[in-house]
Length: 91
Image (cartoon, rainbow, N blue to C red; front, top):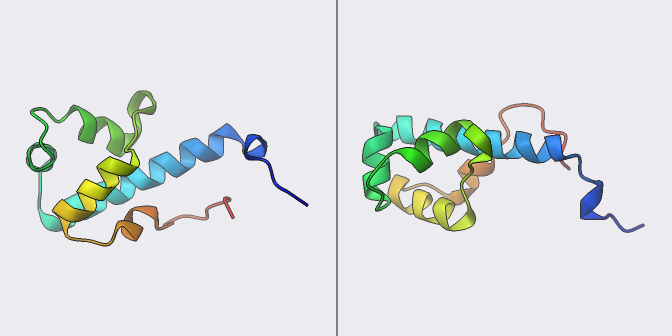
């Protein structure tokens, strides 16, 4: 039987974005970078994107380009951002 994307509960997508943000924050802190320093390394002049996406404020989240650049700057595998530190209902 086929699955349809519109069957996904929107809360699960919120949980997913929050987990990615949490993982980015963890990797940033592991490297000892402030939000401002990471923002600068990404080519941004302010911390807006990083600070908001780390906590999913107003549904601000990292896109694939952001994650690719973050993995490069933080010198980690992009898979680190998708690790589940909680029980994730998405299969």
